Image (cartoon, rainbow, N blue to C red; front, top):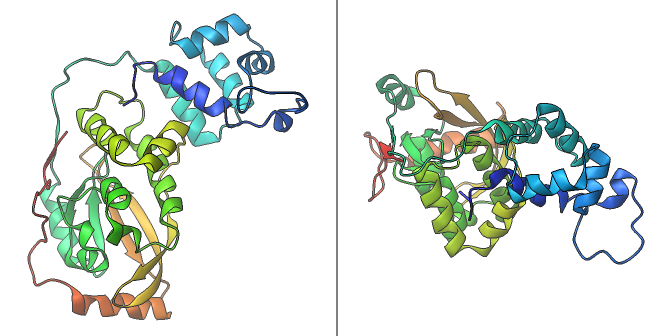
Length: 288
């Protein structure tokens, strides 16, 4: 999902450019022609030779030891999620060519569960495709119907952007979550297609993708500006679906007894009639 197959080198370069020299005890004085740390500074702080670090960034050595990777993670100030991602890149096999697409099919039991939940809920695939959704999810946002893609909609649809007070911040978090979701599976055809499309269509996506930020999914607060019920302060939960790989059940809920819980209940009156909502170009069972 990058311009070349050297994902480890691209990641190291992107992260060192974001480390301020003074945060690792180096003087900031003097002209610096590159942002962040120089290669030789990273090598010195990690206890490896500058030549070896250069080989890592250039892709001439793609499988350094865990000890070297952890030393680099320390210098680059990576958190636990980013460190795990770096370790995965160092252990990952080279990308395979002409990989056969895989199909994402939501288990029937999960589809049935969606229809019984009194909360907005949908199933998200590994590349953030909306694979299934209930009526309340679509009432929350029409883009949450099967056939949508959360990344594409947030970056390219002004109506989806309008739901967020700071949609660019939400977009940054979504891209970081996407990197965590696809992990080291850099030859996933669906991921390659999506990254290529958004890289051409959105300068912001290109900038965020080049940062190589990685954030694990977790429970998080969300503030939405709904066109019918106004401001909604919700919590978003993501639960792994057993029996399949990479699919998550995403649910929105509000603190009981608050005006936001009342507004969420009001959304049911705007929900579509019974039956699973769909988009015109459905990807309910996504090939990727």
